[in-house]
Image 1 (tube, one colour):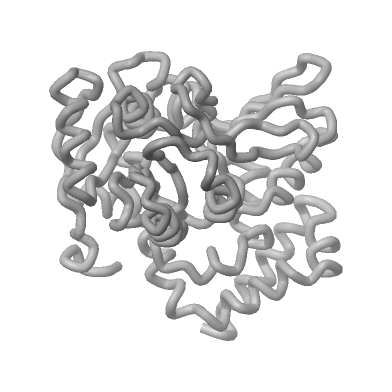
Image 2 (spheres, rainbow, N blue to C red):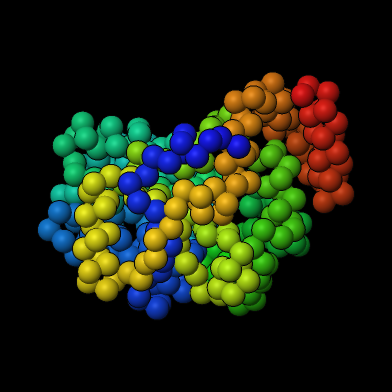
Length: 322
């Protein structure tokens, strides 16, 4: 794993949670990001933000601009590859005053650039990312669970407690729940057949160019006892630091100091995987070709058994090309 000196780029490290109990509960882990959006929309500097809403026709999440916090859909993490950069470019004229954006680490620089070029004040929240998943990956999980995706009227990947899990609501009123990172999601995710190539090659576990970067605090004491949620987060800019101080002083957040060592411990698996990405380009290219081969993908996703067979294949391939 990389040396601490190469990762310690943040101005401050915290672990905490929103003092708004509903936000804290409904968010993925602690509600810090949602509370930042709520607070900034209450200031004179920002009149626009983004939310994600479930589209029954597309059977997936889509981004939406909002101009009031009451419009936000607190739905936890969205484990779905969404082109936020293109969405903002296409809707640039609809942005009023400043905007608060939440996006993946790889999207931060491009989004900041296009907003700055258009003289739009911006505050960017990012998060620790192990790689996104195409929407088809979610649909595969539905199939393995015996769910007709056309019958899904709403779903969440996280939220409503911590670490929570996948929550699915069907037209007939039935609700289905799967704990966080359990099968079939775990199997689908680890297969990497539904991982965009750029995610396979990505070396960014977190963005130090975002104003604030969020992460789950996968540390012993939280994993054992926390059922509501805490957020580990990094403050990367003076602007981010100033707003967090304001929110802390207004008792909108409860925070304790954290450290780069805590971050490395909590997100060690993701950091290690990202460090390996540049060293395993040949292997990741093979994975990408597997995922893009329609026939191979169709055969290997016929059943969980076949997907496990694919996992065996990639382990063998890894040993050969390593």
